[in-house]
Amino acid sequence: MKPFTVRLNLHGDLDFFLRSGASGRSIERGLNEKTSVKDVIESCGVPHPEVDLILVNERAVGFDYGLQHTTDVDVYPVQAQPTYFKEDRLQVQRWQRFIVDGHLGKLARNLRLVGFDVAYDCHAQDQELLQVMIRENRALLTRDRRLLMHSIVRHGYCPRSQHADAQTIEVVRRFGLFDSIAPFTRCLRCNALLEKVAKGDVIEKLEPLTKIYYEQFRRCSCCGQIYWAGSHYSKLQKRLAAIRAVFNG
Ligand SMILES: [Zn+2]
Image 1 (cartoon, rainbow, N blue to C red):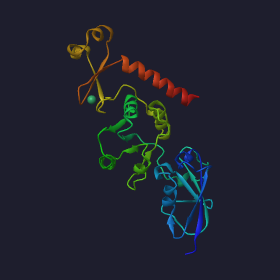
Image 2: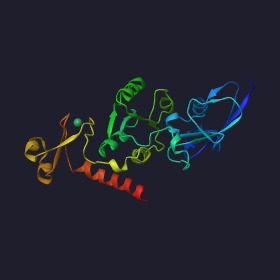
Image 3: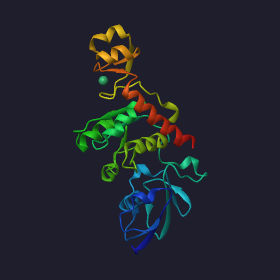
Image 4: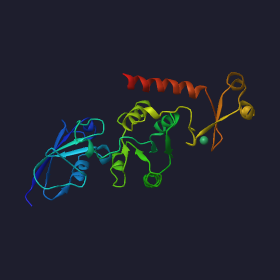
């Protein structure tokens, strides 16, 4: 086969994934055998769960499309779509179940704080993460691009920011979660749902000041942890205000 050149044009914020040294949003790859468009995109550092639309010579294609001639490929993330090609998107727009890798503990906690179902185990190895992801049909949140490129990953996202609050906002935005935020409904320790309990039922376990100042309590239906609208809650209010400001702004 005659050698040919594929030029990838990365749209939206996908240039985030370009290896250092690359400049601009276009990269050229020389090839000498038929190669799937997915492999070419990932060889440039962009994991497939981040790719929502691929246009080859202005025609929408799937990940397994084989490239064999000199071609221009336009690659779009979920957030930066042209308004046409609505039926050709490769990713789900909304998802509510997640698995978070061991380095993103604060993100896991934040997402539970606003009510989302998040599997998290700081000791889990990559293989275990992927197994739970498949078994429980969860979207993978990780900053490990290699892991996100694993062929069995169907839904996933790489938070761009290194800061948990900004990451939380990114995830809420990427997966269309803003309307589903339900603060103070899920256990931060074990992810189970909280249930309302009467003060009298938990009073023996409370610290003296908590007994005096708080009236409303919730208890984890799994591990028994007790929650009240104290420090957890005021921090949560601040984070929610920050999230709302982003979405309203
Ligand atoms: Zn719990």
